[in-house]
Image (cartoon, rainbow, N blue to C red; front, side):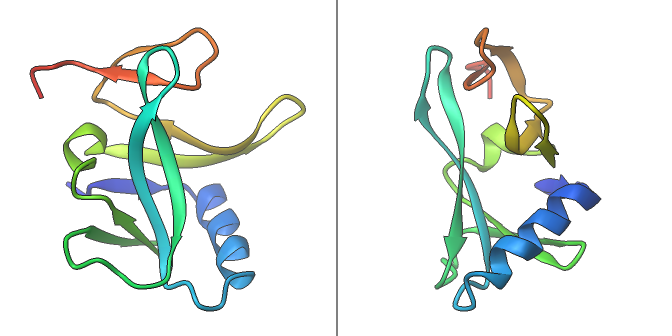
Length: 112
């Protein structure tokens, strides 16, 4: 199983982002303390790849998963949504045990 997979829409948006940042070799996905449920997703450009990160290449996009976040997001699908109310990457994570009401943060069981 890959650490993550990305949808066609997410790949198309990632390609657009990376075209605007010619020094970037990919995107880094990680987690951070955030919101009322405790964790949030963080996406950044990768200029210099960290050998500690897990690199996944899917649909021509290199995604580097922060080693500290890997267990929390293993098996996650990264999608992109552009709607009237929300625009951005969306994540379907099989490890989530709960999400806050606004959807900005999530919880993972301590058993992981």
